[in-house]
Length: 183
Image 1: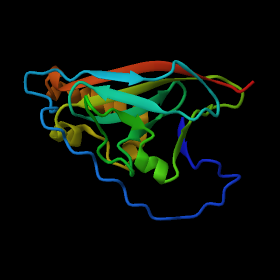
Image 2 (image 1 turned 30 degrees about the vertical axis):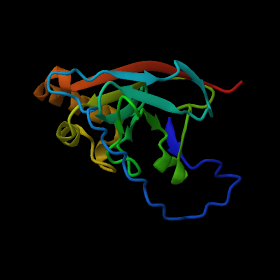
Image 3 (image 1 turned 45 degrees about the vertical axis):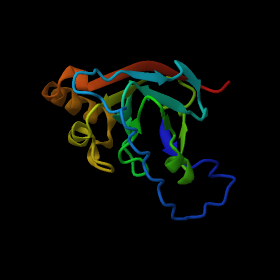
Image 4 (image 1 turned 120 degrees about the horizontal axis):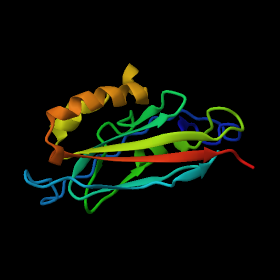
């Protein structure tokens, strides 16, 4: 899976500056309480076909900041969120987060299923972390555009750091999926 320019072969690329939309406000009462466990639910298909454009919905039981990445069986994978267009992605009980966000779509980005090797199915793991506290998100998130945009490297470093946080203050979703070649 990679970020790409949609329809690059058929559309003339026009560079335009777009102002990112303001993040949605935190709704009073939707913050994660100190004694509340953050829970996470993700709509993600177990199988996709090469070239499929993906849209993924993430829901949480209280306001939470998200880190999203994928790991390839035979490759590094990549961090998808936070990104240049979504520096602090967030979901809450009354507003799920959509990957691809409005900001990313406005910037001309797409999330397309791509094979690592032509004609050979790819097996990957999709991972989402939800942090109940913004300061924890800021502490554990990968730097946008830094070398830890490599999903495997980030995953290894995050596993070591999570012990610093109460288990009730974060949640993780992980799903294996297959990208099938087009027939």
